Image (cartoon, rainbow, N blue to C red; front, side, top):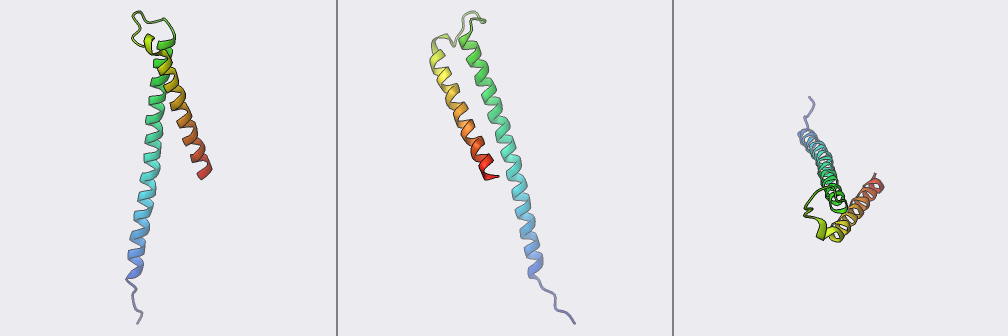
Length: 89
């Protein structure tokens, strides 16, 4: 008569939890990347509006320098995060 081991099903459940957690983490990374991309595109649009005179009564005209520096800062942070992500793979 063989003896059943009750530890293996617990390990199997643990592996399933790890797999689900890893899958969730991957989806969260993708969602964050999409959100950051949308913010970057919106900031680029605001920068374009601020630097051109296409819009009459431009509300961003006085803040051109701040908007430009903010765009460069966000772009630098995105670049650092992307390079860090490439190194981890």
